[in-house]
Image (cartoon, rainbow, N blue to C red):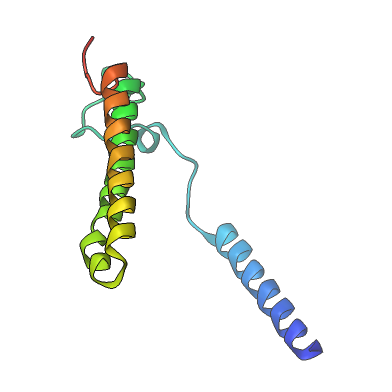
Length: 117
């Protein structure tokens, strides 16, 4: 047990020493204006590259991800139909689809799926 602990401590010290040494030896200069500015075909940007994005876009992206994961959960349903009780499989499938449809209806009713007002 002592040998394993000593080996782990030695490997941690060695890796930390190598990381510190490479940081000190590296030829990395301080960042200048050209390296910190966004690349736009060699031209100086006329306005800030850090513009805020639309919250509507973010909301639609989150909704897409939720429904994308739910579709991934729907894909194995036909395969599980063969190995499970048909009555319970049908009940679970219908309940899952009803929850999906109710979620879609709620998002549609709230106006979250409309891009412009």
